[in-house]
Image (cartoon, rainbow, N blue to C red; front, side):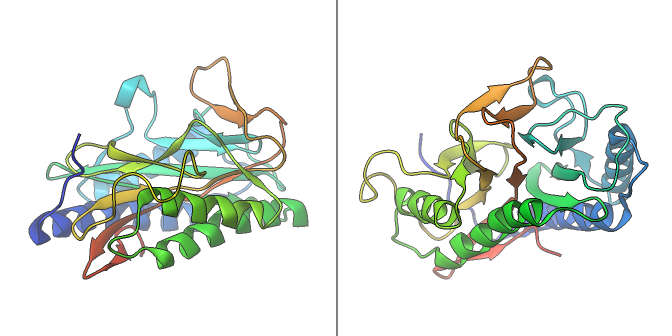
Amino acid sequence: MAIALRKPDEITKLRKAGEIVGKTLNYLKNSVKSGMTLKEVDAMGEAYIRDLGAIPSFKGLYGFPASVCTSLNEVVIHGVPTDYRLVDGDVLGLDIGTKLDGYFGDAAITMGIGNISPEDEAVINCSRDVLYEAIGSIRVGMRFKELSKILEDGITSRGFVPLRDYCGHGIGTKPHDEPNIPNYLDGKANQGPKIKNGMVFCLEPMVCQKSSNPVLLDDKWSVLSEDNLRTSHYEHQVAVVDGKAIILTKV
């Protein structure tokens, strides 16, 4: 399947959907505190998205039961909100999608609740810093596999490993589209499709401590590492314009 090249007016629509994601994540980052339940966090996120005029696109997507993925501690992605009540020292990943005028936005952060350990701080910093490094490296003509290698090298150079079997993705009038963008290199970096102006996609480094092997919990959504250690996930949606990437989900 060909990778879509978006026209300027489409990128404007994707930016509007993405800005709502960014605003919602910023709102939750400043609002979520110890004592709140994950279901309360989800309800806050959904209400904020709707107040800004968008639809929470994750709700019902592939059967997902909530608007916000709340990935707690060892869960790296797709955490389902529960009645669990947050305590100081928890690590919480928040992944949000929106739909506005037929176009989608998608981004994620990982945050500490109260005071967290230096070890947890390091894994959070890894996924965030690697994300921005990878975005800064994007140029027209480079291959997506080169981008995957940059993501992998950034993670492993900090002493961590990327989660396997899950990846970043294209986005537009579908929440997930071509291409798939793993956080690790499969095959050779000089193979596969090249990045072009007009492409819009999400990068999302999913960082584990020792094992890259994913484990799916009994809820059939929550994914953690086989090592059962704490993890981190950051994501931005970018558009390639005038030869470089611009972030659509940054406030």
